[in-house]
Image (cartoon, rainbow, N blue to C red; front, side, top):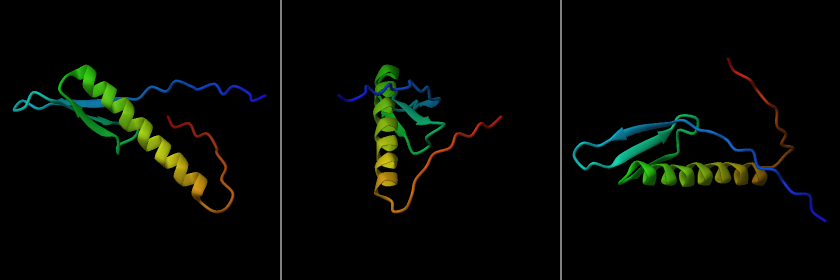
Length: 79
């Protein structure tokens, strides 16, 4: 039997800009700067940002798994 994996809910800060010309919202994740998206509404932007962050984190995880050598993790607290 497989053990259930608990997923930790992470919170991210999104920098939001509303384009005055188009009325669209543009966002970028502060913690994952490569995660950038847009939406016609603020709710749509936030849904799109969830997808963008998830895709980038999954891509990074896949790249680590493909790397050669031993991979390990350590926690780091920054104040």
